[in-house]
Image 1: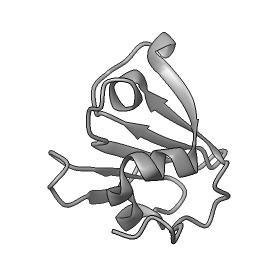
Image 2: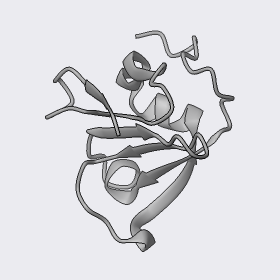
Image 3: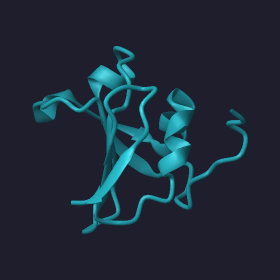
Image 4: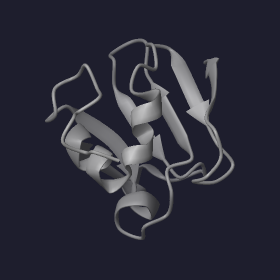
Length: 95
């Protein structure tokens, strides 16, 4: 996959939310939401976390960490996408 072509409409330095499981411990991104109220992207492992386990990371860093999120780069505001594992297809729905 060519990570030189940035697939998101948002700026590369857009702040996103993720969890330590994804960025510190290498777990796959299994849940993504694009918040309707403020446009925040969240890229999570799919498990429940406390707020102190959250991380703020630039969108480009998340994309380079897991280029497979390019397939949901056009996720509309107010929608979420989930998958069972990193090889599964994303299931998209309104929140």
